[in-house]
Length: 224
Image (cartoon, rainbow, N blue to C red):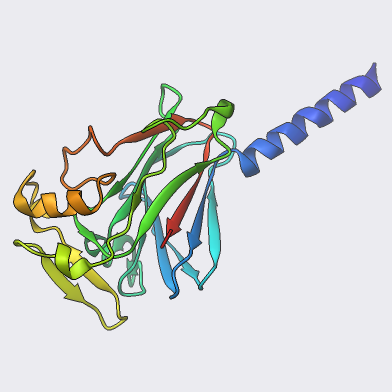
């Protein structure tokens, strides 16, 4: 009996270890032809983690057995520095970037995720659920894969949207109306036409929010 209990306990521990490592994480992948400085933050009160991703590089954020991450964001720094010196919670250039946004582990057992161009667009970006919880089959916005890739940022950056270039070589199109809390406007519609899956203003929920069961892992891909 003791041997049986030991074997059962070992199987439980192995199962829990598998779930922690593979069942609830975000893997950030750089498929661009250039280096990416990826910034990761939960809410606004936690420190911003900076990850340097060479071409083809990746890193991951593991949420452990609890699978909980509230108001989390992943984005690329256009200046190559995620946080202000001496202020690890203060972003340097989040307002110049498009975001992958997550709330993982809500009370109803659902993850919520989206792409946002509300502030700006700077890099092609996608979210892809992997190892989907409960073996669910993706359908529409249920465990779907939002993608935003603007091939001609200069053509999109019209109306009252503003184009910024940085010493790093990065280019960012500022969503002026989205940043100011307006929409839909002619300016936000340019972003929506370019990226139908992504938020173009704050209340663009119906066409931009994706959901999936908690326990799912996700890839965040730059230049998908």
